[in-house]
Each structure stands twice: as C-alpha cells, then as structure tokens.
Length: 233
Image (tube, rainbow, N blue to C red):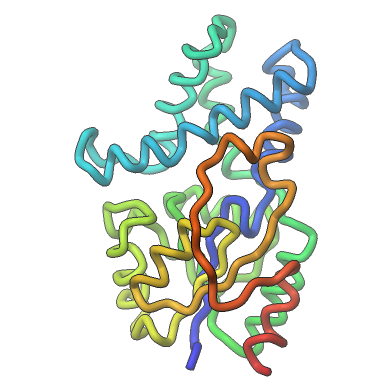
C-alpha cells in the first residue's frame, strides 16, 4: 500500500527551462536572441547529471547543488565563449533556480493528494534551495527530502532507500513521481512504485540532446491531477 508519494522537482513540479529564460531576459544578462538564451539554458542543464555523477563517483568533493550550479555555469560560459557575465550576475543566476514557476497542474494535484497521502519532495536540490522554491511556486508539500541529507545524488539507489527510511517508511509504501525515466528506474530498483508524468515541453526543441532511458513505469499520466484517481482505483 502506498502511504507516501515522493516528487522529483526540476521538470516534474516546475518548469525550469522557461523560468530560467524569463529571468535571464528580465535581468538583461544577455543581449542576444531567444534561441541563444534557450541554447544557453539547455547547455547549463546538460551539465547537471555529469557533475552529479562526478560527486557520486568521488571525482570531486561533496558540494550542494547551488555550488554545483555555479561550477556548471562556469563550464557553460567557457564552452560558449561568453566573456561578459560579471561575478555578481553569476551569483544572481544561481538563485534563479530558487524561483521556478510550477507547471499548471502541480498546485492542484498536491492539494488533492495531500488529502489521501503524505507527500514529499525527493530532489537533488539542497534544502535552502527547495524551501525557497516550494514557497515561490506555492506548492503544498508535507516534507522536503534532499540529497544533501545523504551526501549522494540521484540516481544513486541509496538516495531513495534513505529517503524512505528517513521518514519511517518501507520502500514498498513509497511512490516516486518524476518526468525522467532514469530517476524512476533507480527508484524502482529501491522498491518504489513508479509514476511517470510526461512533460513534453520540458526541453523545448532540444529534447534530442538529453539521454533516453528505457524503463516502463508502474503507471504513466499526462497530468499530475490524474494520479489520485489511478492510485485509488
């Protein structure tokens, strides 16, 4: 029986791509066209999993996601040969990840699910980042669970096992909702029930740049608001 539903955050509950682009435009960080902005944001996100893997493999020391976002930002700036971003603007851009807009079904779904289940994030985002983000996006969620607590990043299987343990649940009582099959595949190995949410616009026109994982989840939904009915039925 599922008692608690964990949620991935970036891409699953919030639209990081459009949110980052809009904030960069608002602050006039770049004087470039929209395609360049989108390429920049996509390239930044493409640095995400590789740098997390380096932490998990002990190739670099443990750092919270805010620190890793800065390192990956510097990598992108170098690769794209951008030479006009000040250190002050870099710090500002790291905080963009603290202010991401929710998908249009996230708020309603969490309110509904909270009436039947416990809910928690299960994110690579550090706790401070998550607190700011959940407040900004007005997401009603019972617990915040972070990789920061375990000094490991998803998709390391111990993140899922220890997340369940930290809240007093057996993995068989846990579900994970995510828009990334790689996340769900790892959670499944830990014993979680898996729920895939299709976010067709998460990567814009650049979805082909992101690795695909072959995995069939327990259930798939088009909207988060479908989850409650599918689980209860």
